[in-house]
Length: 247
Length: 166
Image 1: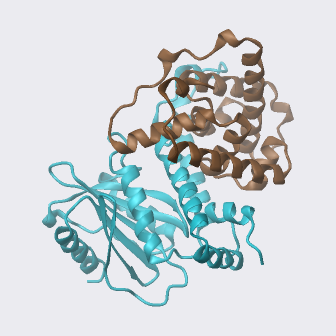
Image 2 (image 1 turned 90 degrees about the vertical axis):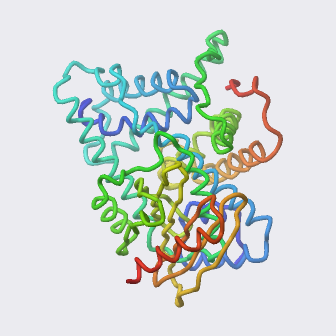
Image 3 (image 1 turned 60 degrees about the vertical axis):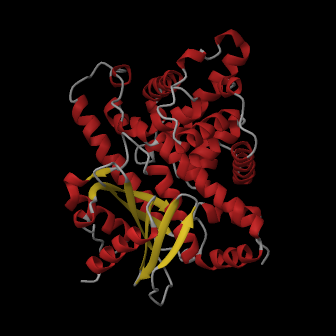
């Protein structure tokens, strides 16, 4: 089958059936120009979320809350709104889960590095859920990915959990945990479902411009630890993450 | 159906409007007009159908009407002083600003689709229904919009004065 432009767009948006997705994967393996375009479009989507998701956290201006005369329980409505927003976001993310097309490990590293570059400089909204609600965070992300996740403890390595967020990835919902050290340097752990992956892999290293990434596959999940750190230090932390996930 | 039913959707309407209109004031005008219109036309909403999709469809109509009005009254252009300041000079923030300025340079009909798909994560069929256009048109505008964004972002940086052009 000839891969069409519509297929490429649907690939970016994760709207393809597994069979069609495999065909696009095969096409991409032979068309580096299209890989670059797909990558650029994925980055556009991530950048749109980074730029505009903070609007969701802004208080709704009074003029939008007082459009009709019944002002009772406006606060409740806003709170309920958040619940609905959460459910909707979850639902949309969830509909993305379950398609095949686990990213090749190399693209896992690349995706993780892009997500790190987009979110780690955020001052006001680095995460969706703060570490104070860690149990909720881990349960929520586990549910969305359909796998039991853990937020590793990296205090011995000098990093504290900031929180986490849900991201759209090439193969569905992706979890990102963010850590920060005393100097404000940030690390992110990107966890993505790898459908169809049969074998675990050893650690692999990728330098994505300034972001160093160690990544590996462990069962159904791909992990990528990203940070603007030296390779030895990042390896030490990656080892700790791995040991905590496989006690 | 009243404001209380609509209120849960307002944060997402504001997010979409901000990306579509470019600045907070114009975006909240768009949301306000949309909500007022939805309340006035509430008898047209079918209970049980997707309220959010219906609100997006109304916002599309309001947006198109505003564009027409602005073309008829060019003096009502956006005030440059209302552009949000860039909070940081770090590379990523600059990239995001480039994204925002590039978005503003997209034809509105492409911008809407790039945002409904990429930011609001509507399916192509939902976008077609919301905008009342064939799905083939959705796909071709999506491609053209994304490609144009890519060229704008990776190519030459637009000059500052271009960033306010709507």
